[in-house]
Length: 235
Figure (cartoon, rainbow, N blue to C red):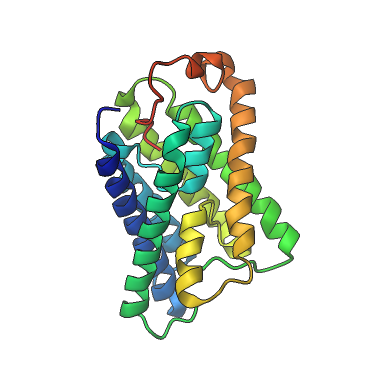
C-alpha cells in the first residue's frame, strides 16, 4: 500500500476504538434487556461493516490482532508491520473501554468476554468461530481491492452470525483486542489468556483451511511472490 505506515496505524486505532466502543456499549446497555442479544450481535456486525467501508482502503481495516497475524501467516502482510498494527489495535481498544467506563461507571465488566460454561468449551468455540471468520476474510479479500463492499457485508455478517450463537457461551470475541480492552480497564483478567490465544489459533487454522480450499490463489507461493504484501484486503 502507498499509505504511510503512521496513517495506517492511526486508522487501525480509530477503527478498533469504534468497534470496541460501539460493541461493548451495546452489551452494557443491554444489562436491562433494552438491546437484546440479537441486537448486540447485529451491533457488532454492523460496526465491523461500517469500519471496513470507512477504513478498508486506508489500512485494510484489520481491527483485530488475530486477523493481522492471519494475513501474515497467509503471506499477505509484512512481518515488520505486525507488531505496530497489533499495538495500535490494542491501544484503540483500551481507549474505547476507558470511554465506556466513563459513560457507564456502574458496569462491572464493561462488556468483557467471559466464559459461561467450562473453559475448554469456550476455548474450542473461540478457536472454531475465529477460524470461520478468518476463512471468510481470506476468501473474500483474495484479489483486487474493489471487492470492499462485498467483503464488508460478508465479514460483518459472519461476525453477527457467530455472535448470535456463540455469544451466550464464550462471548464470541474472535478478537484479542476486543477482549483485552474491557478486561484491563475493568480488572476482569482471570480468563484473558483464553481470548488472547484462541483467536490466534483459529486464524492459523483458517490459513491452513484456505490453502486447501483455494490452493495457490489464497495463501500459497503465489501470494508470497507479490512485490508488496497485500494489506488492502478489506478485513
